[in-house]
Length: 115
Image 1: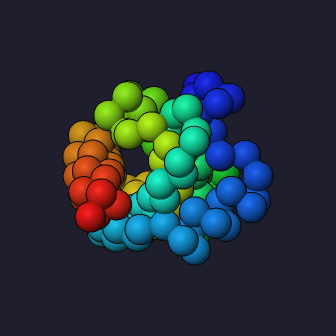
Image 2: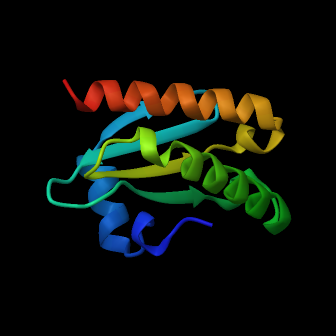
């Protein structure tokens, strides 16, 4: 579980990150990254729509993404808000495939945000 300080919790946080952040799209994930000066650490939020699958499938995808975000949290620079949106194909990926796609997309988003 991500710490309370490492989570996006309000709809305004999600909305502003998705509207104003850098967008990186892969086959099964969309990552929005927005730099926020003055925050102590990176914050993550997850969007897994009903198109991904039933409740059990969606929760599995969210748990996997949360674990990946927790492991990548130190690599993300301080003062960044990240929203990860899972696309329907993410439910069919195995753990290794999801990990590779998440890490590649996140590193691409970090590179684009520093430009």
